Image (cartoon, each protein chain N blue to C red):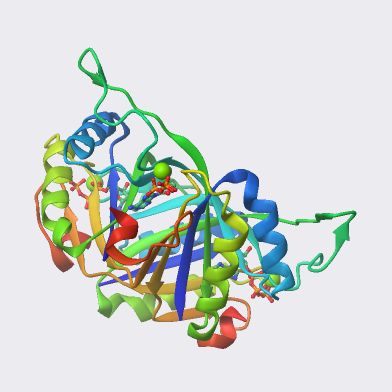
Length: 113
Length: 113
Length: 113
Ligand SMILES: Nc1ncnc2c1ncn2[C@@H]1O[C@H](COP(=O)(O)OP(=O)(O)OP(=O)(O)O)[C@@H](O)[C@H]1O
Ligand SMILES: Nc1ncnc2c1ncn2[C@@H]1O[C@H](COP(=O)(O)OP(=O)(O)OP(=O)(O)O)[C@@H](O)[C@H]1O
Ligand SMILES: Nc1ncnc2c1ncn2[C@@H]1O[C@H](COP(=O)(O)OP(=O)(O)OP(=O)(O)O)[C@@H](O)[C@H]1O
Ligand SMILES: [Mg+2]
Ligand SMILES: [Mg+2]
Ligand SMILES: [Mg+2]
């Protein structure tokens, strides 16, 4: 299994969510993060002795899926999250060793499907 | 070391927290996530052109522990987080390559104990 | 690639952020977590039947970087996050199998640089 972590613009989230549902994905979590990304303006700028921070609110989508789903889902997220402008976000893939559905104690691929 | 990520109902959290403390675990983080899970009703339903989202507030517990602790801790979380109703949540186990206690610069198992 | 997850005191964050920028790092995410750590007082204390929880607000910094950057960045975080008092926080290193910059579809090390 893999964990897909996608950091995206809040305003594209409804499109991603709809595409995921149409793809049959109905298990994931979403949270807000304050994001810093390349080319967003202020890196290196100081005001007095205090670093001038510029953050952008992003949404982090976390989804654990079977290995066989990773390519299709990252493609789906890239397509629905792209605007072509800087700040569209990132997707990270992390290994997951086990998954458990608490209610049924099912483990592995069946627990994330 | 492993990272245990548990997504649970907010109202079972006090029980989990107490069980963890009695087990001797006193290092972990908690945050809120908006969760989508299977069988929660609305998948595939549209209202006009906009996907109808139904989210549930869940708590995400993150805990890095020694490999030898993983089985006991996942059992403990499954037991204290179960209500038997859909939406009880998930547990994910991810590999962790290093841990550092910032104050002492200790690393590895000693840093998470 | 690796994911660096650093749980730090909110008040040292400006120093970390400045040090990261001077080091050339301009991609990461920050969020709030409620943290429990060793030696923070109340473990084992009950009030009636309810566990007495004591949480501290911490910031979680998440940063995916090339393997070659991990040692320098953890050193930088340890130095800028240390106050010498309990509660300074933890750093965890997790393996990351892939990274994608959504705008350009670049993958791997180039996507996190
Ligand atoms: N290396 C990274 N590790 C973790 N999170 C990152 C990283 N880089 C970016 N992010 C997160 O992704 C968000 C969006 O990044 P962004 O799309 O601006 O990346 P970028 O590399 O600057 O690409 P672009 O040139 O298209 O803007 C950031 O605000 C941050 O939350
Ligand atoms: N595959 C997944 N990846 C990441 N997070 C998930 C995944 N599946 C569920 N979650 C998170 O766990 C929460 C609870 O999921 P839930 O318990 O409803 O899972 P389920 O598979 O629908 O099981 P049940 O049939 O018992 O409801 C979701 O709201 C979401 O936050
Ligand atoms: N094993 C762990 N797994 C995940 N998060 C942890 C773990 N231990 C601590 N944390 C997070 O780090 C925060 C700070 O922990 P803290 O610095 O108090 O660690 P500690 O082991 O008690 O070290 P110290 O003795 O220096 O206080 C906690 O509030 C929690 O958010
Ligand atoms: Mg950018
Ligand atoms: Mg469900
Ligand atoms: Mg402590």
